Length: 131
Image 1 (cartoon, rainbow, N blue to C red):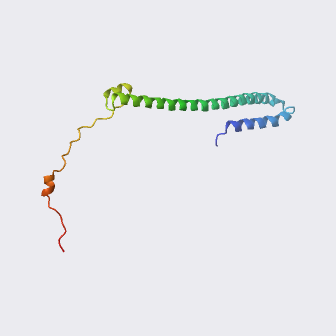
Image 2 (tube, helix red, strand yellow):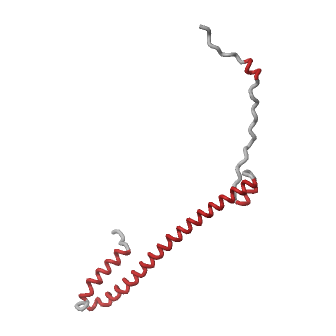
Image 3 (cartoon, one colour):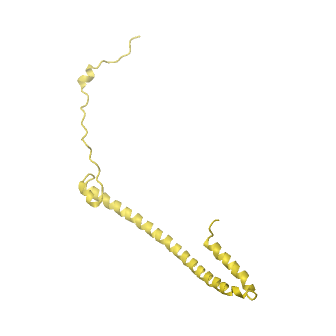
């Protein structure tokens, strides 16, 4: 059996209580339960109103928290960019600020000599055979 929602339980109790009120004179043994249902319904409605107010407050807090997170990330990015600009992208001192430095290349790239003109002259020329 699926669980009933809070609203469904309250509406079922209200319906029962409304239908029960006209018959209390002929069923006095249910007067205490009817009074209890009245009290519980009042309490349930107050709790539901408080719940709705808190849901609204939660949404507001979540929005404020997201805004603070966005502002924090923006400010942090600006500070990180300034520190990297001042200290350099590979400076190990960036670690003190919680910023991982860029990795340095393991070995510097070797500079290749441009092909010499002599090597180009010695290379056989490819030409098309005469027709």
